Image 1 (spheres, rainbow, N blue to C red):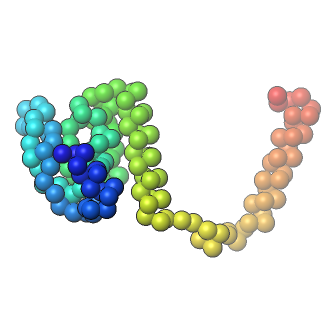
Image 2 (image 1 turned 60 degrees about the vertical axis):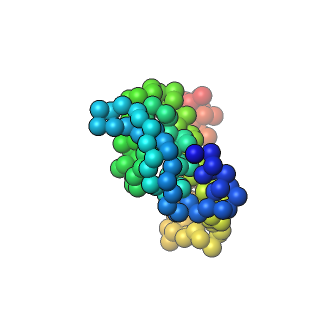
Amino acid sequence: SDEEVVIALNEKQLSKHAYIKVKTMVRDENDDLVPKIIETVAGRVLFNQLVPREVGFVDELLTKKKLQQIISMVFKRTGMARTAQFLDDIKTLGFQSAYKGGLSMGLGDIQIPKEKDELIKQAQADVAAVTQNYQMGLIT
């Protein structure tokens, strides 16, 4: 079951890239949801816990284009509120995966543009102009 896969992943008994067989709900040729045992990778089970039941199991590589199609399908089948929740859920999953993967950034990872001083001077001039307009009552 999905729950067993998630437990095995959390207990590090299973890799997200491991091929497994799992019983899940998929859409058949008539677009009806039917139970079926499929072979997939464990990470997709984790992702599909976030996909609304009405959509069915998504067993595909998640490219940018495919993710757009999934979001569109979620919207068509569930509406705006559930789509917003789905987007928030996959954002959180992405953050958790980056955290667990040890992804980090430091100052050494950031490239300082050559025009840094010029950009700072321009930003300060913009701030001064807005402040002056505010003090003159032109903006509130």
